[in-house]
Image (tube, rainbow, N blue to C red; front, side, top):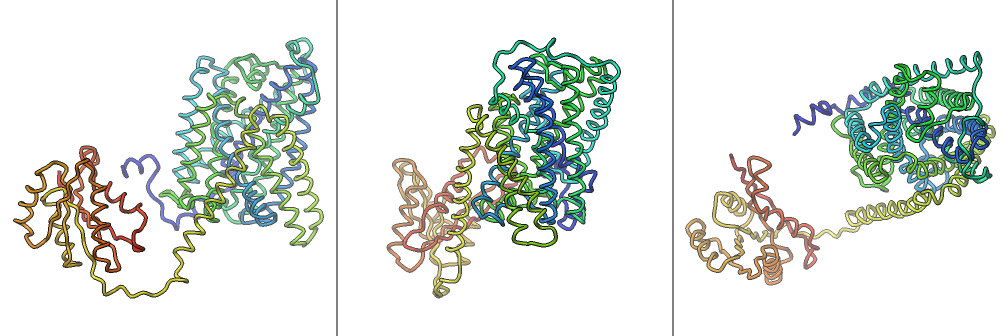
Length: 611
């Protein structure tokens, strides 16, 4: 199994190599930006689906809505640039909100962002599959399985390590940029030369009136274009030194590219009056209108699918680090802090992958069904982070702190308003689920921390009274299933630590105990053997009753030490052919609450079979 794991994931890396696993700006842009850059695919689609029900009057508002979202993008990008200045070692929403607003707002921000990361992965993968299925409609019924296959490949890639992930992510990201931006430029040249189209002539008839609520609902859906912009502030430690400067430059490049792609695609769609069919995305329809249905169109769809597939990597890049921070603060299990063989937070990656797969299957691979759950978590985290930065500048003061506080305050205001709009307009469409889950998870995180606090208190040496029990000689009880070679080492070890040794045999069939007693007497005549009949064919129950009885009878300030002889098969599948009684006994003893105020020692003595 180790050889197979190393073949798939690569050989283990030494801890000293961690610095060499960091990312330069080119790889970092590829690692952290796919979600932000590719969000134009599902954001444009949601704007189109939101407005098309109002006919041409609705679709004519796509351009102003796109401009409003771009302004919001600019404000959020500037706000996060300020965050990188204030937290040069990495200032995700959780860190900023907790340090400046308190533990509860910090946990709310962390929970919202974790949900956003999981949904980012699910939405990106399903949208990527829909992009390629638009070019090849025969794939449409199989989009769940295709999305799951891409999820497995992405999981393996992330488990291999940061540098390899950044290198592999670079291919789809830069392929998308070097194909999509030229297509937009070519489209606008065509529009200038030959003119565009008329929405009035091609738009379907309105099925709903154009209302303020419809516009706000569409705006909230289109705001998914901003998701992923916070990823760089959460991933500063992944950059080469100087981390914060490199992160700031990468953030600026990402924001500029996001704005160009979003405004360009919305404007071109509006200019050419593009309308998508039932089994086609709006970006596919735009590419077909500009390029026709030939090889260049297929290249655009392929590059769109690839960047949407790897856009899920924003979740893989951010979720494990956030989970590790929470685990370090004891709000999540400690397992999330452990680096795997390849110097990656493997448990966080596997957990994210599992939850993403559940969402893909649960929602049938439908991006439109997942979107309502999506934006509220990201914008809630944005709001708390920027509000925290206002408090940070107010505390720190420093040069131009008022300007910095105003910029972050503006970011908090606009994203807070967006949260309200998304929450109200998308509540019945599924946003209620995110609103309900966030407080439940916050309560769960507090329970985790309470448990760790209780454990630390109970394990503390501070209040321990020194009691000398070193003179006690252990009483040893050896449960046996018969007389065989596996018992020999156990008996020898028992006598190396004590002279008070007792063997116990559970008699499941009448008469079986006497045959064991006769054979036992041939080998260890001086070691007492207790035969316990079990009319209900239970092994664990009679053994526990015997241990309780002998402990109460001796009352010597200790519990009997249980020594378990256990033979270990030579091959893993051989274990399936045996009852694993030793495991059952061990589990019963370990998880049974201590008796008479003492702890019981359990010792395994393995006997390894050769074949």
